[in-house]
Amino acid sequence: MSEIKRWTSICQDPEDGSGDLIVDLPSELLEEMGLVTGDELYIEVADGMIILSPKKPPSS
Image 1 (cartoon, rainbow, N blue to C red):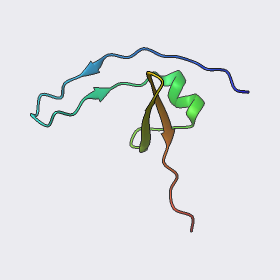
Image 2: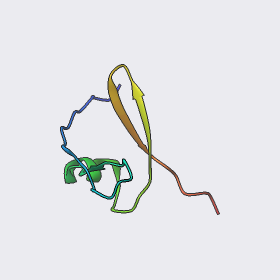
Image 3: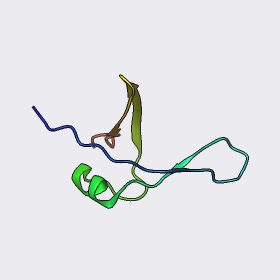
Image 4: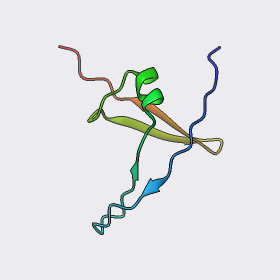
């Protein structure tokens, strides 16, 4: 069973009227998930937690 890790980040308003939020993910989290800037994530809310998982590129 994998260990549950938690990070805290502040949501920022891009102030473009879109209603979107910017969430800076800590570099340790990005490294552990094997992510780089521009990668897309699935976002799920379960039991009061936000769960991120990487979208996989289509197989060639």
